[in-house]
Amino acid sequence: MYVEERVYVLQVGKVPEYLKLYEAEGMAIQTRHLPHMAGYYFSEVGPQNMIVHLWAYDDLNQREKCRAAMQTDPAWQAYVAKVRSLIVTQETRMLKCAPFFAAPLKKMLAAAK
Image (cartoon, rainbow, N blue to C red; front, side, top):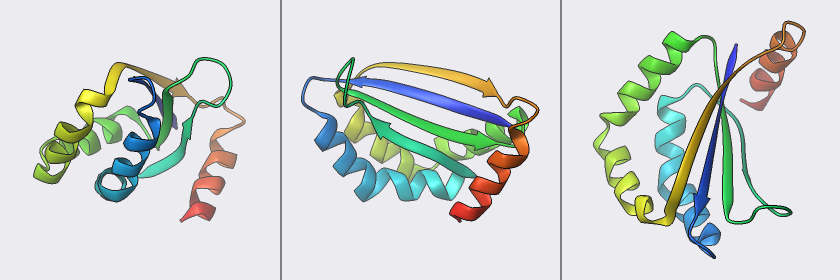
């Protein structure tokens, strides 16, 4: 399994606006296309104005197919147009599960559904 970590640094003070838009519009679109939301967070201590979200995939091919389908969705494109100006920087990491953690992660994701 792989977990994609996406980190957005937003304009100062824009976290509440971003989260409101995401909850109202973006989340339903993303969860329709991407298999497993593993977490969605904002920074409380340390660097501020950060959004961190995690998405789990069985493999990199699944990620590629799911994200490609999402990118062509007109609803996703409209949502991205609304939040793009709030995002200052974006960073993405692909994390491979340690051998002993893949099974527990699958159980956690199944329990969350």
